[in-house]
Length: 224
Image (cartoon, rainbow, N blue to C red; front, side):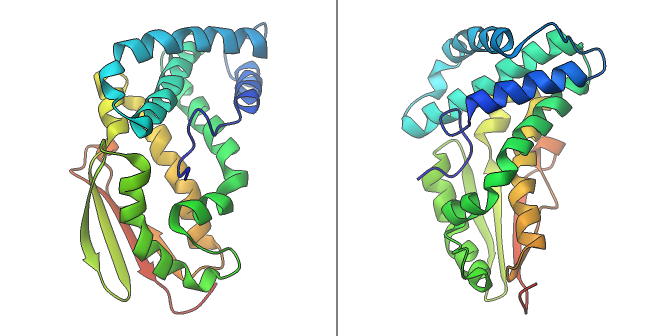
């Protein structure tokens, strides 16, 4: 079961088209680089990145993770070349991936947490039952989880090791890790604003230098 956008799940045609559009309208963007040329440049970068990180591909789950992180890193390097050094490349990469992820967010919440779209009032129970176990099975051994709190009203799970953070640190681009963190804010916003009986907070992130990523779900008394 697919639980996170990966290079296979991502609509690559839409990804490269949107990316080219954003480059064209960005400050210092290169309007002369079309979608096809941009895609060719990025895809040419992916192979060497994967070869340099092949020890991270030990099973099907880690292979999918490596494909996705390699795509993001290759895209980031191309954006740096197009837009120059600085935060603009990360901002554009983050905005592109979030924009493509957002329309599918309810399907993702159903896949990731087993929240029935027709029964949003059971969201907390489903999240509490599935967040940790589906994280382990869906994201693989590159992630470590610990259950800090599990009660009738709260389910707090900490991520103590993150494959994505490790990958980007090892490839001298830790500043790209928040792009993945931002994808979590898409489903978090949906849970917090939608008709569910759960609220979510993430007070700490390892990508910001904290010791753990804390995923804190709290049951609310009524559907919003």
